[in-house]
Image 1 (spheres, rainbow, N blue to C red):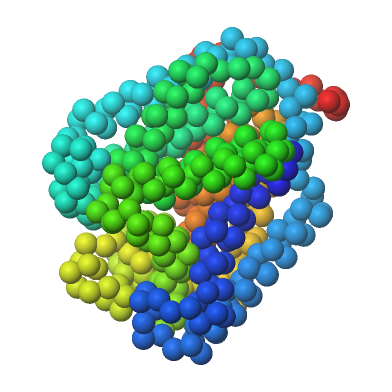
Image 2 (tube, rainbow, N blue to C red):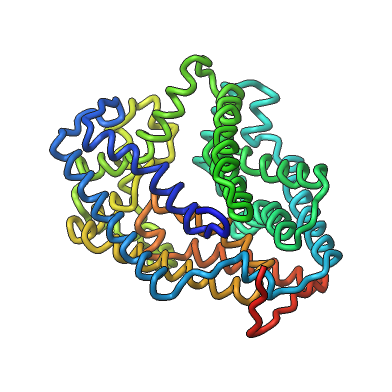
Length: 415
């Protein structure tokens, strides 16, 4: 945290300190009662909490070794080793905005059944039903690989602009910043999910903090997220305004880990859960079963879970469903090692081109899905594809539009 804060710091804050740790403390160690954890005895809740802390200790241990041994780079010193013209930066940022605009326009014009469009056209109930249809049949709304790539490009372009402006110490017009962020907002709001917008907003605040080091401003900007979240809830739900904060805290702190506890309570480790996310699973005729789907009836009534995709979980839940206690024991070491490898890989890339890869690291590192599945790390095809597709596309644009970054080797300019 502070001046030159690394994206790894935001990963720790978001994925651990915000989304998982508070819920584990409340449920496992403070006997907090919640309908989400009905039928789970306190002994198992306590055991789940111990396994959670074991996994966090292991991950922090591996990350600490990585930081101490290899030293994370100071981006605010490294920037003085690079030279880029303001005109080249403006040209590439305009191209990224144009590409993002065309993609978002394509989504809205070509498909009038997007949940956000249905919400504003036909009302809240129709919007919710459209959201269920979108989440359960996403392949009919998206183009394989292309949609994933363009989603990343839209989110990247705003970070490219604000990071580049900070590195070059130039001002960007408010209209350009607003339009750029609006494109991101429209994209993330398409399926009426609130968490992607909140996470991205926190990510942007953290980027500004990384270049200013101002903790007071970080705190005040973070507080501004609260009315923003309340407004989103008012627009997209029928929850009474006096109950919104209770609903948000319940979803944020208690809803994130519920799948993990119910998987430990109700799922016996089986081979059938081993192939989720396995590369080319369809080629080998491997059926993909998910424990975070199978435990939905344990949490919700039939009228509710029939419209849900899965229960929020923690990577230990899937590790248990695949390998039992062995999975709980070894999975944190695998996850910690892969996170460290990913962070150091970006550190290397940033040392070669800070203008392209620093904004990319702010986008991809904090959003590593530690609160989802173990196979996300064990078979990291999504991590690899997201990076390869986005970096290849951005580098291709740089060649086409002659975006040049000059690196002064072995020179360490001081502020």
